[in-house]
Length: 183
Figure 1: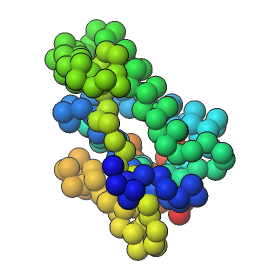
Figure 2: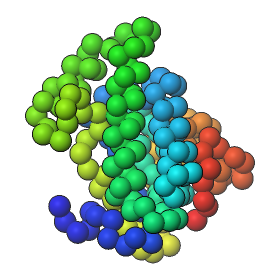
Figure 3: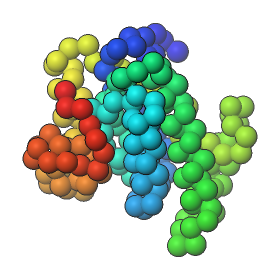
């Protein structure tokens, strides 16, 4: 992996993406999104994660993050991905309303078999692809990219109308679902 895709600056702001294996549309159900939100809140409270912008789409998430504390961002992301992976897979297993349960679990199981880092299932693609946001222009570009993602997908006409995003915190100066630090 190139050094341009690592958390090299411990005090930097980073744009990251987490993508579900095979781009499976898992985050169409509120309960799976809530697992992410709860995990982020835990990481904020106990690990020093600072979230500056975020969006949950149907099969991936984007965030701008930094840290406030000693825990390394790569450790926070590793722990968050490991925890959310196991919790979301378990939620899918036990969700009697999940019509796609067998199909999704099969995809995650097959991906897990070919990855020695997993025991049973692989939910997230392996990398975070962190990009250091070194200039105000790059920060503004990524903020816009994150918040306009639901518009480009055709879900809403205004970014602040997407509930699972920090756009409301920026556009309407209101509080969204997750505490953020405006940059």
